[in-house]
Image (cartoon, rainbow, N blue to C red; front, side):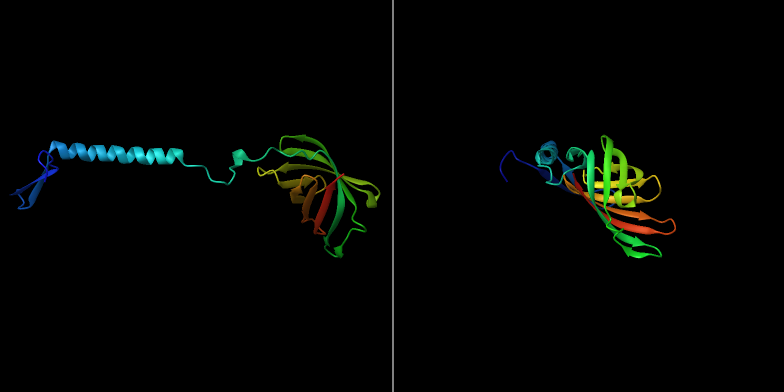
Length: 172
């Protein structure tokens, strides 16, 4: 051992229980304290300087897309008692007339059904792509903003006769 450096002295005497005791001097206690502080600082610096993961957090999601305007397309589906259908051509228009942040409203227009209209309201998910709509006459749609100019909606209504449909819409 080098002169002047002494980490620990061993006291070979026995305590009251007959066990040997170790005694620590002031220098060894300071060395352990400094090592502990140094380890803490290393962990702290490493934690503060790591780069964030490549995944986006919800707070960093893209800006909310505007759905305002007309979206037209076709629908195919299934109706209880009727079976599979393309809704006699299945032409439809989704007119989004108002949007505030991620909430929007409008009307579905069905030209093949003598211009029948159905009011709806919807929400855009935090990811900026997921859509959920509710229709005034019943039923819900969940969907995806496939691109800035294309939407796919899946409609479901559990009223009799129950019905499901897939709507493919493009911005016009």
